[in-house]
Image (cartoon, rainbow, N blue to C red; front, top):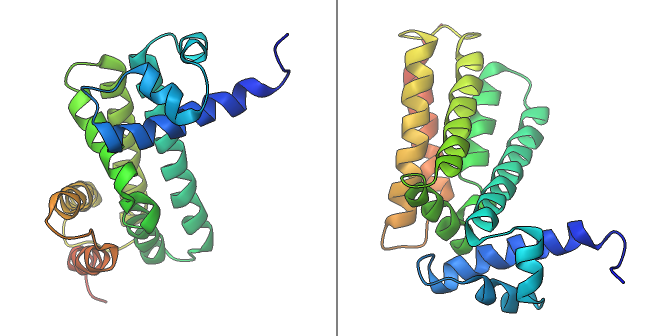
Length: 193
């Protein structure tokens, strides 16, 4: 007889095991059996809860997007001005949670999978649109050198590009230096008063 209320616990265990397994083994060679072993659960349960490796990866991406969004929202609650809110978005993008090696591996996998998996592509587009929308909202409340749309697009591109440069570099990714570069970029977008 199945234990009532275990489904969310097991699903989360599989998602967290998938994140670790992607980092340890890479995505191409990863099997649902690898994820099940990492989670300490049976492979049959992976198929029961997700149906396929692809569905497990999509659930993993959703999990990371939810965690990322929660971190940003937490920082935004503490910000009082539009400029502080822009800093909160940057801080959430380069915080220690986003620069953990296993999280980096999962995000890189999602970017690659977006080329062949329509659902992964859709989720990445949602992330990108939400990031630009949040940035645009704050830039519209500030005097910018160009339009708020241009400022938001350039800031989003800098966040994504700088994140990739940091995580693909030879050294351990440094969020502090990325944040400093992003803060200078944001300042360059705002008209001095």
